[in-house]
Image (cartoon, rainbow, N blue to C red):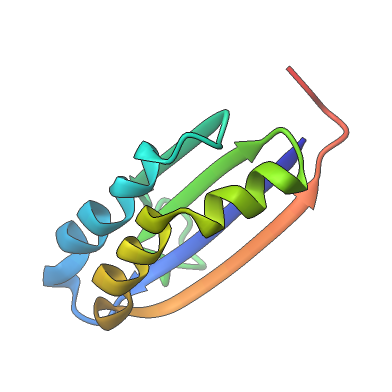
Length: 98
């Protein structure tokens, strides 16, 4: 299983709702087994830079690649890129499966 985690911050805190809306269209892409898009609770006193978290699980690298090739992925990028400051992504192979 591939786990895909992306952190976003908004340039303007007033745009967090629009960032969420632009990222939530990713949930309509069929290639993930799990895809969550939620605001960061900001409960860590040492780090408050992240406003939104995208967390996905994919069966394999092919499923992740198909997700990133989907037209809704590009639509999301076009909506969110002008509103975001930070984007940090990580993908890793997880030995744990459900």
